[in-house]
Length: 441
Image (cartoon, helix red, strand yellow):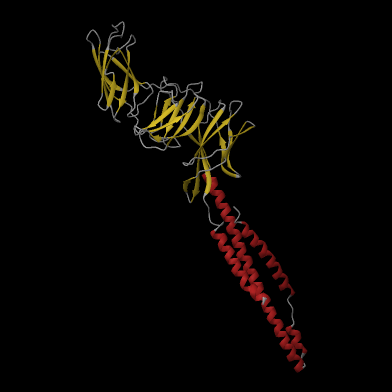
């Protein structure tokens, strides 16, 4: 009875466990990983990294909101680590690693979530380079007696917010420098799609004057007419650099760094950068204000060195609305280094998940193989049981007919069969345990 029960239970149990393994641990699960972005510059004491968490499944990524993520950095034997990082609903976290000495590089970076490696690799650091201040002069067409220099003070405009525009005039090369001073030249500005205050101004000794321009459209053609006291005239035309989709930084610092987006946004991504690299990263939430704009604030102590703040609508800071503002309210626009992709853990995460699923499927295949062997041996064992019943019947017949050779032939034993059956059942038990162990989290 027991042998017959085992003959049916072994294949049923094995097939059930195998199916559970194949459709459970044997199926590829979403693999967690992060992408690491930063500005890899040597010489600073701070490395600020942006982490983008995701789950990779069949080549597609889904946002991951990880908790307790640690970034480990090794630089020249010094082992450093960040504080535990919690990712926001957008799957983005910011890590800051401080060092008592300037970073030299290359950096060995590893991002961990518990015992799971989300990304790891080597990040080389480049030498700091001073890009200097770019010339934000607007290119335009001029004619007449004067040469015009038109510069947005902070480098760009965002509609519909006011910005300072500096205009200066001089003499073109083809005109003899007959003027001893450029003071007293009247400048009149006009442009459809912009509000200009004042519309007229008089230049100082350097021939300079400042205006406040508030663009109300994304395409503004500015015209400037100049006239000096002697009646000499000049004219300039150009297109203002109005940045569609950008987030405006309020130059008034009395309430901290106030960021205003004219387009609906839940958050903006901010990087504070200097020539020494990225000092700080943040995700600033925005909320609708009374004017219908989306406003947020970042409390920040400005660094001692000249710095820029890069504001973007995407974590990679590669969108069309990405702009760089000078951090100091009266500073001019500068060239700000942009985020670079330093590490991408997606490929390694996929490989680890495929290896885990393959090992689980291998265990399932072994379970089926051992179960098949055990089933064959069980069938043979049942055959032996039938053989013994046959022996009893033949014994009675041999005694009746006095032919003992019949009984001797029927009593041939197969001791090896019993040993093989016992070994297969023991092996089946171990493989079954191994298959069940694949369900561990």
